[in-house]
Length: 324
Image (tube, rainbow, N blue to C red):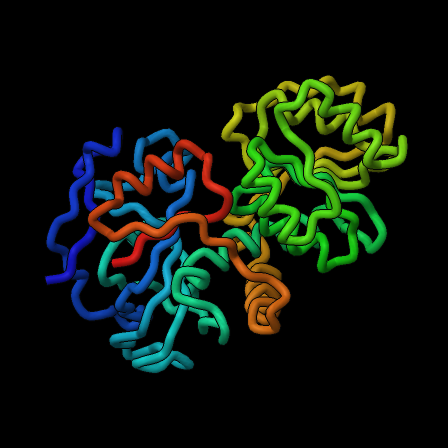
């Protein structure tokens, strides 16, 4: 009998148990996937605890990204075959042995990636691509400052920023994360907790300001980084696990700088064609070997509590994955 991590109420990880669960045959527009790897993210933990801005229905199965092998397809599904290796994304339901995913969020798995890598590819890299290209208009030769550079979207932004021809300055809280960012293409990796961090960023830019900030951190880091922007700089708001920042409005005025929101789920609803093109671009770059997720730790599905605690702690350099 297949299993899934299920909570009858939102809250602490202790509310969740690994229980028998079979989603049944796929609906007309669904794909049934035998899951081989599941990404575990900080957002998964927030949603499972009821601390995210949107609340899921109960009972709740966490997980928003996975990779596996197609077991069955719905009657209306085209372009997906039984036995095909795929990656899938969704709002929830992925911490399981088997999932039924809508066909529109099921993607062919790029050649050369493991199931673990494919499971954590789509969300992080499409977020970073949308941020840097669509929202930040990052240009070759510009300077990109990536906060949280050892995390999921941070490492994706480092790799994609380097691919786009930017000079990437990574900011991360541990030596392991800084080493991962350097390996991913950062020209320089700075200690995010250093007391002279601001001066180090300024020196790294030769006294000039940063062109683009990729900010999945929030909190006090947002204002500190915004102050490092140069003329017409762009600060990309990707997330705020460190808290929602209060930014003095004179700062963007003085530099003609922009505070730019990055909302991937909103893009899918408002501009589905652009969202689809971004997915295809990321899959293409992965197939070409230009980008590759960094896996920090793998856990068995029955170790989900430990994996979620690891993700909540945020100390790992790279992604955390469950392997059913």
